[in-house]
Length: 381
Image (cartoon, rainbow, N blue to C red):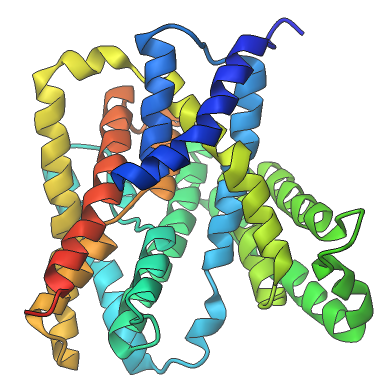
C-alpha cells in the first residue's frame, strides 16, 4: 500500500492518545489541540503528510462525528413544548440568520457564510448546562432548544442550498430534497413500528455483553446507508450521517451502553484523526499574514454579535440581563458543524480556502472562549 506510511500512523496515534491528557491540564478543548498537533507535525515540522489512507480514516471519523451530533438532536423535546416556549429559540435562530445575511451581503461574501455563522455547537452547550444544573430550567431549555434548532436548520438549509448550487436547477434540487426527507421519514416510521412489534430482536442492540456487537454494526449500517442514499439524491453526505444519528435517537431514546461504546470507538480514535487531518492540510502560510488575524478577530466579534443580539428576546420571559449575556456567549460556541459547513463551502466554490482557514481558527476561538464568557456572566455576584 503506497499510501500507507507506518511512521505517520504511529505519530498520529500517539497524538490522539496523549492530547486529551494534556488538554485537561491546560483547560483547552482537546479538539483545538488536535488541529494544532496536525499543524505542527504536518506543515510546520514536515513529519507527516496527509495520505489516502489517513484521509479515508478522517472521512469515516467525520461521518461518525456528524452521526453522534445527530444523537444530540432529540426532537422529542419539542413534543412537550408549547408555541410560547418555542418562540424565543425560534426568534434567536431567525434573528441570527437574518443578521448574518445582512452583514454577509454588506461585506459582499457568498450568502453561504451566513449559514455557517448560524451554527451552534450542541455538543458544547449540553455538557455546560448539565454541569451548571440548569438544563431542566426554563432558561436552560431555551438555550438548549435554540442550539438544537440552529444546528438542525442550518445543516438542512445549507444542504439544500448546496444541492441547488451543484445542479443549477432549483426545482430538481427541491424535489430531490423532498423525496430524500420522505424516505428518511419512512425509515423512521418503519423502524419505530418494528421496534414496537419486535422489542426482543432490537433489545440485542443494547446488550453490552454481545460478542458480535450488533448494536455498533446496526449504527454503522444505518449511517453508511443514509450517507449512500444522500449521494443518490445529490444531497450532501454529512446530512445523511447527521440524520442517521437523529433517526436512531428518535427510535431508541434510551441507548444505554451502545451510545457509550459508539462514543468511545469514535472519539477515542477516528474523530481525533479527522481533526488532526485538518491541521495536516492547513495552509500555514496564511498564519504569517497580519490581515488574517484581523479578519479572524472580526469574525469572532461577528459570531458573538449575531447570537447575542437576538438572545435579548429572552427578556420577555423575565430572564436577567446577565443571564441573557451568558446565553448569547454560550450559543456563540461553534466547532464541528461550522468546520463541516466550511468544507462544504470550499468544495462548492462558495468560500475561499482563506475564509475556510479563518473559520477553522474561529471555531477554535469560540470553542475555547464562549464557555468562559458564559461562566463569567452566569456567576452570581
